[in-house]
Image (cartoon, rainbow, N blue to C red):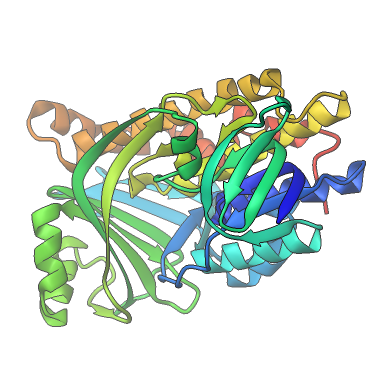
Length: 409
């Protein structure tokens, strides 16, 4: 096949599908864009969950997916962050409550497959075209420098703008020779679903433990999903351990905050690494989500940063179309890179600092950082700032909302 698109997206994860749905729905405010999405065969459901912020909720709603996601989204109202040697409800712990800032909740815990399914349906309903195949090569089209030519296992495709949303091992990034800075955290995340002895209280719990962090995320049926980041050797031992031994270790490391925790599904493991693309853009091409940046999961910000990428790029593309500019114009792409790269690198720096100092740090610096949790907890101003940023309410993160052409229900 040979097909020409206004925008071609590679990758059918939440970020790529969201970018596609936002752009395809732009036809409600002018001539429809022809948006294609190249994806490989559907991956197996792995049971992971995502923490979705208020900004991400708005983006998913603009993409037309939130009505189908909402019945499966579990709102959490509180967050407790503490470290070994401090009680989760003690003075040294950090406690966030939505009621403190007049919000109904702090965000949602949602199974990943619920989000991707809803976004794919919204994308197709808006006129987006799904193309099953693998990217083989991509370059600026010879004889047509205003388009990108993509060779795929499904045939040749061209577009004004190519969007790489194909994850940390991005074939789009590789095809355009965009270098990355990478590194291993020398940690593995264990993900599993468990049934707690006591109610999770609509609270997201996170404890800094030796060598990593343990998060217990509340789910609608009363169970919790854990994300337990540990040193690689510790993770291997726990993955090989019996269920009884794993549960006993989990009880100890969770400070028994929810009582005994019983496995309700398999244990999954994901090696943790960081990645930053040196450029987010090249001629007629932009990277979003994990193709551009991968951060540690301890703050639950990975998909939220990616959805903000999708929203920013869609916002700028709609502006370009409204002013009669080419969708892949360098001015548009440079504006996208300036907007999102700084925000993402700041978040990467903060998350890495938390991981190094609070999760793995020792000595006086770590001691001071841990005391800072209690200081922050006693400052209403600092807590409001933290909550506002976690909700995605910082002005730079929500500028796309002011676009009159932004897709709205």
